[in-house]
Length: 327
Image (cartoon, rainbow, N blue to C red; front, side, top):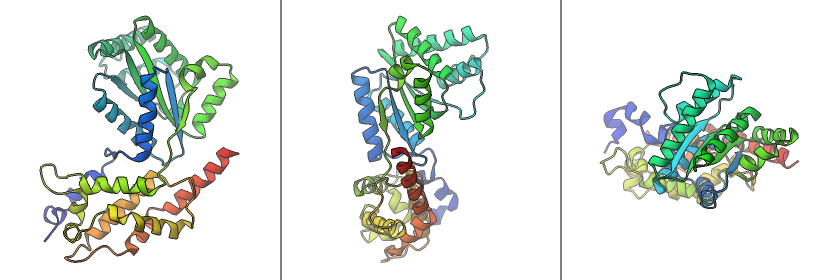
């Protein structure tokens, strides 16, 4: 028995959702993030911030948050905006960037025209969807400047005069984002802190067996290609799956390999999603070529995957950063 990839070629494997940068799975940390945001929206707070170290999956978490909000609250107006890490100090450029985020086709005009166009666009979206407020999701919030916060305050006030609320959800890398908030306080802009950055939460890394088992379970149940009966796991390991193999059952072996590389016990800082998913992709790719009737992946396969993904190095970086932030 040959797998889909063997019959149709390597391109199909490359196109698999498990290898796509646009695929985001609903992890336990993202579920926790959603619950915080859900309550913020319920009680109409004006803003909430999330911080996390590099590699934890901030951008992917925001992508999934947008998807879940649209799915569970279809009348909600959700706009996702990514701040530029290398910014041009131009308010016109900033307005144009936001106009692009709301899919406005007209980017010409003076600053006043651009601002009014953006406000009208947001008001139209809110009224069309019969939504009392607009949710603005901002990625790379560590790149925001004081002028950007003032811009958000102006937009908030303009919308408020028209009876439309603005709730901003920001996510940024620490320590950069914490430095941004500290600068606002240093400059005496407690009005901006109060409106947009008073409530600060942490997007935690992956760390527990529940975290990993939940992700592996999605591989065992997600279907691809659509319309087939092929789960993600079965796509790569049809023979092993025919013998009862599941990726979820590999959770203890993954942690055993991780402890072997990192040491026991595992650091409380956890491990980053970026390297974790790299390890999973390596495991599936390598075992795909070894998939034979009656053969299950050997335990050392996870050791190879963890080492390939440089998880130990990434865990040490998280541990070092956690100690530095505590100081």
